[in-house]
Length: 86
Image (tube, rainbow, N blue to C red; front, side, top):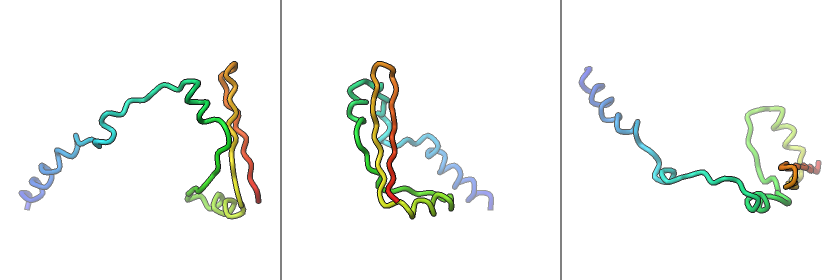
């Protein structure tokens, strides 16, 4: 009885060291002004998911939602404005 369990555990040991081939060469790039410039502007909220019942009820009332990202390079800040139509 113990032999099948031992074989199952030993056969799964290589999975502990497994890595996704997509993420193997992933390196984080620093955020630069050009990156932030591409993010600035109007963004539309398409969909969301939550298990919170209060959020679900509130989300049903939204007809449209969008965000504006405004950059301030001199103060290194990002202003976020959110607009919701109910």
